[in-house]
Amino acid sequence: MTAVIDRGEAITIMEPLLIGEGSRHRAALTEFGVELAAKSAGFRRSLPDGVVSALAELVRAMNCYYSNLIEGHNTHPIDIERALRNDYSDEPRKRDLQLEARAHVMVQKWIDEGGLDGGRASTLDGVCEIHKRFGELLPEELLWVEEPNTGECARLTPGALRSQDVKVGDHIPVSAGALPRFLERFEKVYSGLKKAETIFSAAAAHHRLLWIHPFLDGNGRVARLMSYAMLREALDTGGLWSIARGLARQESKYKQHLIACDQPRRGDMDGRGSRSESALAEFTAFFLQTCIDQIDFMETLLQPDKLRKRVRLWSEEEIRTGCMPPKAGNVLEAILYRGELPRRDVQEIVGTGERQARRIVSALQETGAITSESTRAPLRIAFPASLAGRWMPGLFPEA
Image (tube, rainbow, N blue to C red):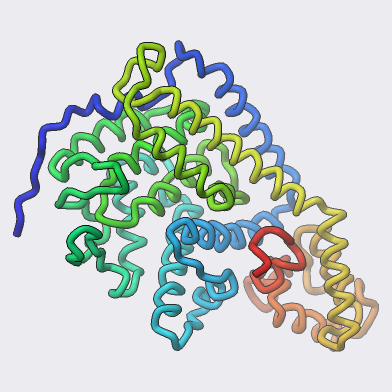
């Protein structure tokens, strides 16, 4: 076994880690942070609880789809949904990608359930646990990493820091032996921040983790899940939106910003650290504005009147073609308006007998349009990927 080499790099080579209060960039970035906090809180308050839980499930699939797309893995949202039901393709490569997508969704579900609460997202333990949970659910085929220059393959150990040097494009991350002290500094800076400062510094943490490159593979997904967890807790997002869609839709610009942040200081007017403060500030502005754009997009999709209209049009078409019983749209509208609907109310809403009311509920459940925790629990709306194109246009690419 090859010894892990520490080349003695000084941890100061990744400074600055924060945009300091005295920075000329601070005021403009603070405004973005304040706007983001206000928009995130307002969006969550605008939604009924039943819609919140359903939307959070859809966002997990969305986040997974776009995060994997950035890595060059295109797994259709419907295939992601099938994987969550243990319905896998017979084609080995497609099945592997479904398993990879399922792993991503399960890790985000763990985050949504509070797995990294208490500021754990940016700790060494938290970052390694994200990687471990993700890697342990991957198929064996996806655990092997090929070294691009030599063609040699090494097996990824989930949750373990890399034990060899790597090169990412033109960037050469710190030596494997230096990882513990760089990550100790990373944790000390980012895990001790107050909520407002966490919002403001999430972009910097995102880049610096990628710059350190702690794992042999999977660093991009870990960084995006870490950022998601940091913002989820600091903003109390409820899991209702994610930056991943915005980053994927601007992938070239996203990666250009990351490369720019790798660069050394641009002169005496560019902060006091080894890295460019201006580049880090520009990425922070891009990152926060992308978050704001995604909230605006989700708010537009979830505008009650417009959402009800899209759902109504879909239900009318389903009824007209005989795929759905009459009055099914009335049940959907009632659930959207109230957030959840007791089963005993269905009969009154549709104005039919109990048997027909049950038939309508059953048909809606079969399409995935509504869900319930048990046969007696209230009915709630669901946002299945199969209906996203009609109910939530633009959430996923039409293709």
